[in-house]
Amino acid sequence: MANRKGLRKRKWIVYLQRPYEATGFCNGCRSCELACSLQNAGVFNPGRSRIKVVSLATGIEIPVTCQQCEVPWCQKACPVNAIVHDRRQDIVVVNEKKCISCERCVGACPYGMMLMDSVTHKAIKCNLCNGEPACVTICPSRVLAAVRDAKVSEVNRRRFAALLHNEEDAVRPSISGEERIRLLPVKERG
Image 1 (cartoon, rainbow, N blue to C red):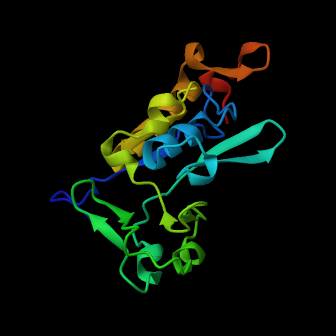
Image 2 (cartoon, rainbow, N blue to C red):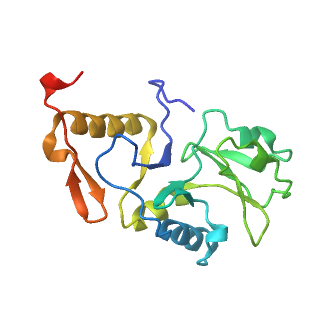
């Protein structure tokens, strides 16, 4: 899945919040789940969503979806070749017509993001909504993005650099609004 320059061209959904970032966080509204199920199944039903919001602790919510693995174990586990490479988007998707509901792909996914549709009982995974991810569009916190592989590193580098070098960007959300993160001057950093 690499292009001429050796970089993968595919996109996937990423959650932009990282421990070192100063802005943006998932508020747990689950709008992404509803938008996904509406886009892909035609109903508002989180059980049919290809993105899940996981509660890690009180107040900590993380949206998770397919990570578009370099080696797609879900595809390798499928006995009927229902998980196929979509050349247009350069990702692996499920052909639900071929799926026999054996759930081998579910067990093979290292991220737990091969899911079974609660109504059709067929395997489902993120298909990027055929290029226009509904979850990214609807997210009120704007913490989801559909980015290409090289772009993920750039987004993370920029945010980390802003936290380290620019006090104006060094704010983080809090319950009462934004609060400054106390940064040491460059000469005091160890």
